[in-house]
Image 1 (cartoon, one colour):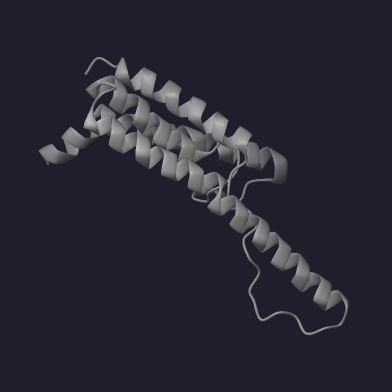
Image 2: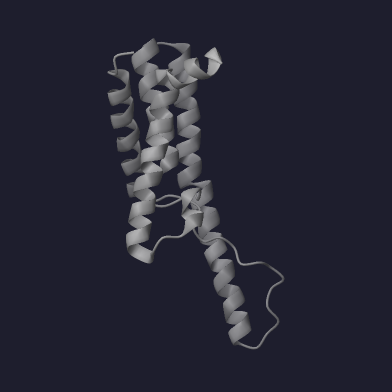
Length: 152
């Protein structure tokens, strides 16, 4: 039981998880005001702000504040963060664009009376734009700073 208490009082855990949670809540609020509440948004990726960027930036900042900028722990967190953010912007964003293009192609084929492609509709919201990433990073940094100054 002590390991659960240790985990939930560990600032290195609290900072990135709180950043993720806050980013997800903001994302749900923004999305709900635009297109109404949808329960799949509770766990879905993409959108404003980036929960990916919030989580890893929170982890990077709290790790650097705890162990110092010359620490092995910071290097691991920083490399992980760079990979996650680059993936959220690069690979996932391009996959999103490809999904949209294939869905459009399939719709055009149906409109032209041709046999539709043998595909299910692809998700068109997967990656993040630069502003979404920046907003997520800001949330992560703020959460890490707040958590670092908590009195435990």
